[in-house]
Image 1 (spheres, rainbow, N blue to C red):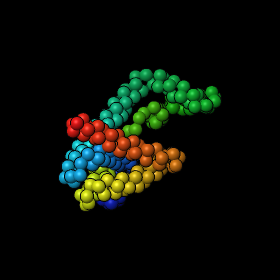
Image 2 (image 1 turned 90 degrees about the horizontal axis):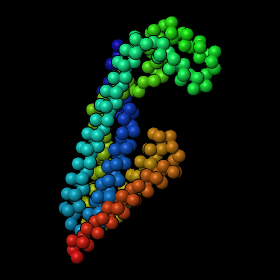
Image 3 (image 1 turned 90 degrees about the vertical axis):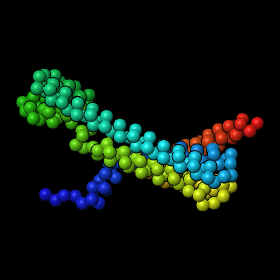
Image 4 (image 1 turned 60 degrees about the vertical axis):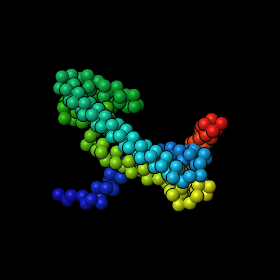
Length: 236
């Protein structure tokens, strides 16, 4: 038996977590972009912006990681519970399971005669019955899912790396210049994320890119708006 290499395992894990990565990058970019612009709108002190941005990025990334871990762990538990419950029902009431399969086949448009052939076959073969019933009614099984930890780690990495992008300019240049540079590179990243979302979700490209960029702009406006309101209230 040939065991996959580390590179192959990482590649497989990356592909399985593509949705988490795109979502994590969008969340990290949008939330921290709004945060740093909101702070930068009220101060010219780089350290203030960096501390706020870095603290927010770390907190958001860990929060998203924990949420992803709990979500996937719950899905795995649900799949295991369903598998055990289905096996018990097949052992005790196989005719009820066959009837449900027949109903689903009819609902999918299969003719009555064809449905009868399928249900007769699976009724006579318990092994086939369990496989068909599980394939037609079960959620994703633990065997076909990446571990909760793998999904959570990819989410952590994606969220933190993308969150760092709007912050970096404030570590390299004065706040007055960093505002514009941060905005420019964040918009570019959001465009790339929009393309990624379109590919992962098989959605219209232009619409998805526009939607992603619009969310980023809305976050920036919200951050700047609340920052100016609070600064004005405290200062006046």
